[in-house]
Image (cartoon, rainbow, N blue to C red):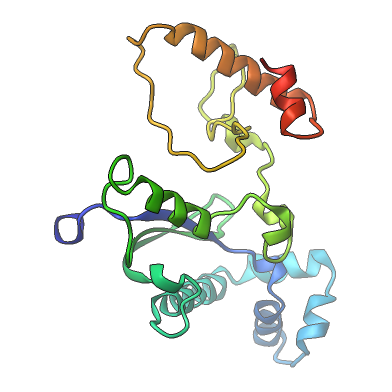
Length: 224
């Protein structure tokens, strides 16, 4: 696809949330017990009962998730109804993977309409507009449960890290806060001052792990 359509515009992941999907729980309950319950009753099931239904029927959960992903992709491809507006989805490559606990998630490369071609130079401003349209770090704009959109360190963050080495999140969280969207390019380790920049970056990242700041100015003042 890259040969045919050039580089993709964005990469994103869709993860399943079986325990938070009442309609799936309703379906699982009805299939297992041959007795119908309402969506509201499914939502009110005890956590253990929900977990049991999910664990006992991984196939139905996987099929349900795949159907949801297909519907989402059809919606964002629609010329009339795509929430991506002028950046509607044109083409995509999808790969579904399964976590150790069995839950599927879809990794997707997407080619969007009206996407900037030279994001680092000629189309820099257009690329910033695209990023700001697609991405937000505001809790007020999160759909549903904000906890599902918030990174929290787990054992997977440190997978592959030797116990004798300092633990560092492999997703590089926490991320550096900035006041506006910027596209940064890597600094080569041969650049003058690289070691000082790296040391300062590591120091700031540790501070972000340990402290809470009242705002950008407080963050800047304490990390000069």
